[in-house]
Length: 175
Image 1 (spheres, rainbow, N blue to C red):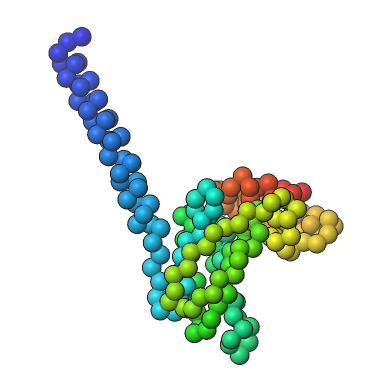
Image 2: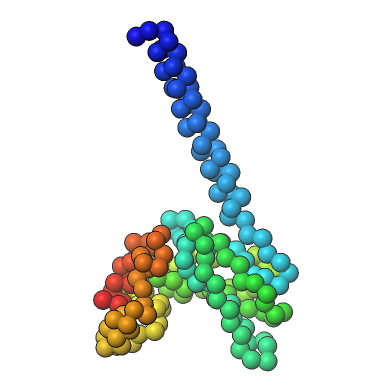
C-alpha cells in the first residue's frame, strides 16, 4: 500500500469516527428540544408517552360541561407524542388519551394555558382494546359493510408509523 493510499484511508477513518461520535449528542439534544410543547394562554398541550416512549397517532380529548353546552375538542399526537389543543374557551377540562390498542387513560383536570403530560395505558388484550377504540362498529355486518365501502382504512395505510399493537387491534376489530 502506498503512502498516498494510507493517507486517504486515515482521513476517511477519522472523518467516519468524527461523524459517528458527534451524531448521538446532536440527536439527544434534538429529542429534548422537540419534546417541549409551546402553548398559548388558551391552549392545553403536552406529550403522551407509553412504555416504549412517545405515543404517535393517539387521540387527546378535552371535554367540559362548564359552558352553555357540552364542549369537546380532539387532536392527534405527532410522531414525538406531542399535542396542542388550541383556542379553548375558559373552563375546567377533563383531558384524556384514547388510541388503538389502548384503554382510555385516567381523566386529568386542566385549564387553558396548562401543560399536561399523559401516560398511555395499554389494553390488557385485544377484546378490551376494541371496547374503547374504534367505537364505530358494533356488529359483524356493520363492520364488513363499512370496511368494504372503504370508509375505514387500516392504521398501516393511514399512518405509516403505526405500531404493531395498533395493527393487531385494528385487525381484531375490523377483520
